Amino acid sequence: MRGAEPADAPDEAFTLADYERRARALLPPAIWDFIAGGAGEERTLRANEAAFERLWLLPRVLTGAGRPITGIRLLGRDWPAPIGVAPVAYHTLVHPEGEIATARGAARAGLPFVVSTFAGTVLEDIAAVAGGPLWLQLYCFRDRDVTRRLVERAEHAGFEAIVLTVDAPRLGRRLRDVRNDFRLPPGVAPANISGDDFASPAGHAAVAFDPALDWSVLSWLRSVSGLPIVLKGILGTSDARRAVAAGADAIVVSNHGGRQLDGSPATLEMLPGIVAAVAGGVPVLIDGGVRRGVDVLACLALGAAAVLVGRPVLHGLTAGGADGVAGVLGILLDELQDTMALTGVDSLEAVDRSLVAQREQLPHLPLAGLGTPPLLPDAAWRT
Ligand SMILES: Cc1cc2nc3c(=O)[nH]c(=O)nc-3n(C[C@H](O)[C@H](O)[C@H](O)COP(=O)(O)O)c2cc1C
Ligand SMILES: CCCCC(=O)C(=O)O
Image 1: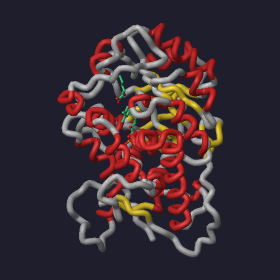
Image 2: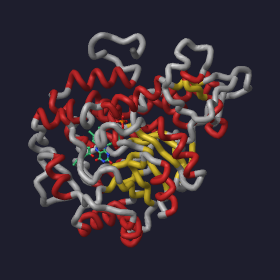
Image 3: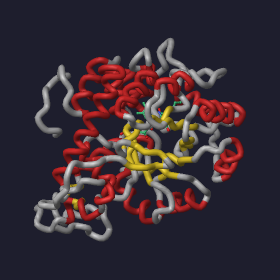
Image 4: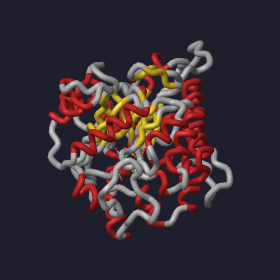
């Protein structure tokens, strides 16, 4: 499906799919399953990547576009490209240096890194080697003192935003982990929170996560931190509007990589409606299934300010530590530049919806009219 591919784990990685195959060959099966898996029957997990297969990019020719400039500005900071590392727990599951190596890899590209509440290494140590913006992903615990201390430490260490995950009153039912009776191996534990039994991620979340959060959590967070607040895990238009009204500084359209509510839609499918609902009020980021530079441009064409990438970064970390992370991010960046050049745009401001078409909406394609609901409500195919 993914083009000219070697049958096994390749020696050299030219695509994110190559890194994925290398990681799979290296990791114990239960750890692979924890990372790769989603909730339930994994319908949402599959849908995230599949949604990109339904979009075509429409190249324009003779536009006079020169060398592509990929930089953006977000929450007061310049990013060299609209790509960041999504928060992923326990990088120490796949590499002994964990998030330290990830931060070093991301620093080579100058790209931002969202560090998980469940990082396996110490926030201050990560900050010491980081080269791009650092954001802290926050799970709000029943114990607000533990939650507050984490935020204060991050702020003190130079983290620039808090990314509150709002789609996890508990963890989704991840059947691979249930069947494997998945436990963290010895030596893998959260480095920035203590006291609990963390061995079973779902069991720990059931005890420690606040299952009854409501919108007042934003004012609580404002009372403990002056940092910008990003809400991660918004999938609906009314929640997106509510987030803006409640004072969020940005949102991430996310279904947690298909790990929470199985049966929720692909993030790409929800993006245009959410962008319209937010109407420029705050930047809209997206994650879920971004695996190629073309996917990044498709998200931007549908109105995203930036994308976050989760599993591929862990694949790079598994395969080559900091070099592997830099490799994954570098491939995405190169592919984004190729895509911009070949689409006929040289800046991201020039990227808009006229650059994408949903394949079912191109009337001359045999696939037209199969009854798939339109991704772009206004049939935005133009030439
Ligand atoms: C192994 C793993 C651990 C994750 N841990 C967290 C986490 O601690 N906090 C969080 O908000 N999201 C977490 N996520 C979700 C990611 O931030 C992100 O939403 C998702 O992975 C994006 O999809 P992608 O993997 O297809 O790029 C995790 C995802 C994976 C695969
Ligand atoms: C308690 C660890 C939660 C990590 C997480 O969010 C995920 O695995 O998706």
